Picture 1 (cartoon, chains in turn brown, green):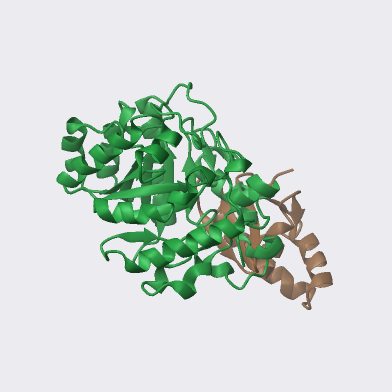
Picture 2 (cartoon, rainbow over the protein chains, first blue to last red):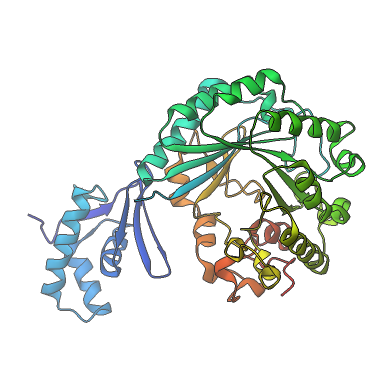
Length: 94
Length: 335
């Protein structure tokens, strides 16, 4: 189960790109391409520079989108779970 | 479902027997790859095609590809690789002999042999490519046609041969070749800005070619799925749908040089990585240049917001070499 306070980071071989309201996560190592929606892109983009937590991502999201903290946390958990399974992000163990 | 295609122009060696006035190569004295390295490049191409679920179209070229000891090893590889649909060979047409012909006959994926022709006469062609080149080309065309290969001409349009541009259509028609492409010179390598024609000159030549193409034998294709040709669409009386095209650079094409350097296009001489050290995925996904080119909204000058952008977009190589900005306008556009 994902923990709100665990830290996650985008893996080094992943690049995020957007052109004309299309969003992608692209694996430069194995070539996998993932088409994202705007919110997924927002979530993953929060983890591109530095590791961060679901809690911090959700705090930022509520200031940018009309969404409640709890609702966003649930969406964010799902998204990060999928991103972990597809090796787009990794958990950072401190 | 029909797979999309991806085009690689692979300059797999740079040795050449000619020293053409407008050649995009900056030198000729480098060590070409060995066979092991070439096959590594070919497999990297195949891996990317497989991942992207696309079919490859390759142009094998140089330098002069028929000087390579490995040309037919590469063809053997291509024939065996299901990710590669077809290939062309781009040649100066001066080195093909009977032994080559016999081996080429066995190549089931060979679509055509494209021969560079810079004028319909010995005077013009040899002035660009050197004495004796024209007569060798004529001889080679005859040899290839005798054995039923598809042959096309590539005419590089520049100041030196501008008066021959329309005549090249008639010459191609009289030779019975399958297709002719007229491509504007890019002032890089051995070419320079004085070779580049004005937009008024380009307009006259493109319109002249269009009118002539309307009249020639239907078996000759004048290839115009390229930038700027859309400006002539009102003059075309046949195959309007085949006029004008957005350049595939950044979308479905790449050029690879003799040492593995990857360019967006052979004429857009800005390296974006090396296929052997970086791999294609990293280059294709990470290159800022490619991402800029993919975004038509970033085009500048008259190309920005142009009504023809979907079927043109201008030539990024011409823009780069004439304005210093690969997103700049195509200075040869006359509209």
